[in-house]
Image (cartoon, rainbow, N blue to C red):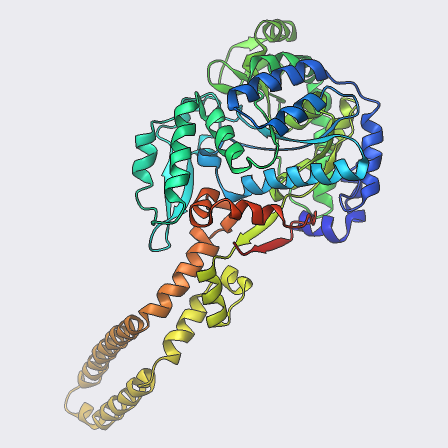
Length: 525
């Protein structure tokens, strides 16, 4: 399968038709998008009113309130990103998304000469509990360990669910090593947990604190005032569900024909909306009418529209329609996706067209790997690169063990094997004694060989213990750069690094250049 990130970064013209607002590397794309958005109308007043009330609850900074007020102005545009309400913010890439959004908004505010504000859409409607349940830190031995929410989510949207007690979280963080800013970070984490009424608020309060020097507007789509604003779009999605499916199918087919993998795989009959009744279930439509996945009860379109008018809070978009609801609510200059999102957004261009919209510019989020001073020292001492770590260090570990073998273990064992082999050769004349002697010799030699292999294994185990110090350094490096055999940004929590380096860690990331191509930055705190 082709890599859409690589293609977009190096050969944008090959995929330009799937990203109709243009190349994110070219400023003219932003200029054209801004001109298009001037032709659109939005419910700016009610939107700003709702955001103001929400951020008063969050205790946002003055810059954030100023940007909310700017949203009332017709010339104001937004750069937006989104992510689930992960525990303690979730993995590093959530922070990277927020920082990219802030920096791109600031850059385009200057280049376009008009207000451009950053918005973080908290995917509170999502019911994928496993996606947000755990986050990972490193213990005093450098090994990743989880901090998890209790329970299974009950199939309901994650965002409104209650927060756990601080004692449940604190107990899981006992493995954290002592560090300069540990008490400072945990003190604030506890305060946010005590303040929050649900997981969405806990997430917003924590991420807002990390980015306290900069303004960032948070959007919770489950708040009643925002559900009311989105209701007309839900009505259109219900009405045009067949057109949406056809549009998605056409572009998905074209995307696959170019050699890319389809991220969205429809199963058939999707209306691309969920209904919470009380579990969040997909609405489907087939010959027997509208119904919820896994249930028998059916509705007609009038009944669903009546329910929508009475209780819009029960409806929510899926991966296909959330972007168009976002487009309906916000004057979106650009959306900041991760690699997986970039792939599925490529399937959505004609879905936007179905509703009379044009898909926004997709500006890839920052990608980075944090290299602490101790990890950097190991890389330099061992002559390794980050790519070496990504490919696995087992071969390098074996080389280290063998390079410290001053006694020639394998050569000495091979010498013993040769002596034994000659000895058994000298015993071959004894086969005249009895017809079974040949088989006895073979069996006996096999037992000796087995013992030699056992001896070899034990000797090399002992040699590894002699090399324990270097092997431990390499394992700590692997666990830090590729925890759980995955990319660091997809596993480790940013608060771990704030505990080590304080607020300067965030400052360092904020200074990284915008590259728009998922190029990985090496971040040296």
